[in-house]
Structure formats: C-alpha cells, structure tokens
Length: 117
Length: 113
Image 1 (spheres, rainbow over the protein chains, first blue to last red):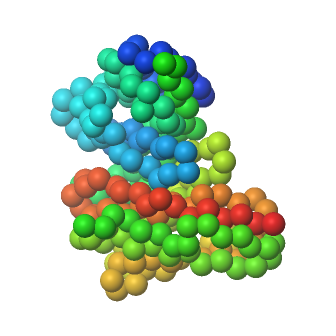
Image 2 (cartoon, chains in turn blue, brown):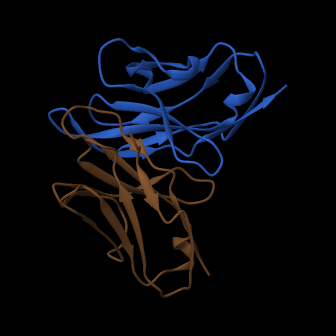
C-alpha cells in the first residue's frame, strides 16, 4: 500500500531564510507526487506536481521540489520565505489507474510552517 | 470560471443523524473525489466517482455513500453519525485521463454533537 511520511510536524523559520520540507513516500511504481498548501480553515491549493521527466519541478509562489527515486523523497524547497508562506503543507502520492489517469491521493500528516518576522 | 464549490460550509448534527454534503466540480471536470480531514491530520480518501459510478474507495465503512449526477456534481451521505465523523470534508475534481490537476473545494465543516 502507498504511504507518505512528513517527518517534521512543525517548522519555524525567519522571513527571508531558506526552507526545505521533507517528504518520503512508499509506492510500488513510478509515483505521481504532489505538494499542496492549506491555510487555516481553507481547502488545498496545489503548489507543484511530478509525473515524469525532469526531477526538479518548479511550482507557484517560488517553490520547487526535487524527486529522488533512490531516496524515495520529494522535498519541497524555497530559497527565501515570506511571511505569507505560513500555512500547513501536505505531500501526497497519487494512485495510477491506467493510462494517464490517477485516482486517490494519499497524503502525509502535514508540516505546519511558522514564519518569524 | 468557478472552481470546486461545496455546500454547506458549516453544519452541526447530532449523533445518529444523517447528513448530505454537496459538491459541484470545476467546469470541464468529470471526476469527483471526497476526502475527510480530521483536525490536525492529512486528508483521507473516501471515494472517487467517474461516469456516475464509484471507481475507487478508501477504508471507510458503508455508512459513507455517495452519488454522482449526470452533470458531474456529487453528494456525500453519511448515516448514523458518530462523534468521530466530525471533520472537514473536502471535495476534489479533475478531468480523467489527462493527468490534470486535482482541484479542491473549501470544504464542509461537520460537527457531530
């Protein structure tokens, strides 16, 4: 069965500092991987996704993630954090359904990001 | 272009009651999934509907059922509510077969007392 582990429950960084959020996955084939962000009381917004090809993926709001098959990881990075980045971040793996369809997303527990001024 | 819309946004129910949550997918999307997100947890997959049929199901009891209509909108029904059913219920839509992005709605907050 697929699974996602986000080892860090809570991370605090200063505004302007760099950020890396860790994600490890377990999946039997080449995974479809995603990072979502959730502000308090809100739904989920997609930051970026990986299906195949270039292992360094660029997303919105200046985020990027790198897929490392050998480490089963898909860590999220941002070179300079802004106060508005404070939120909860979720890594997810998608189930292949055949062809280019994918089904359920399995999410990690999430990492809460606090940004100090 | 409206995104994924869900209703109601908040509701309170009593144990043992039944609840129906509704979802309208983003325009052009034909696949709807439902997730339960308990406080402090990541979303958990309940089921996915495509062409009015349940295509995939997570580890949820039969008390959780759903429906997809010809216009692709969907309902989530939960019977015999338990206190543990209190959560944010998220609807997500996508267009199948194209690796398109899955878009999430703002969710329906259900409190069971």
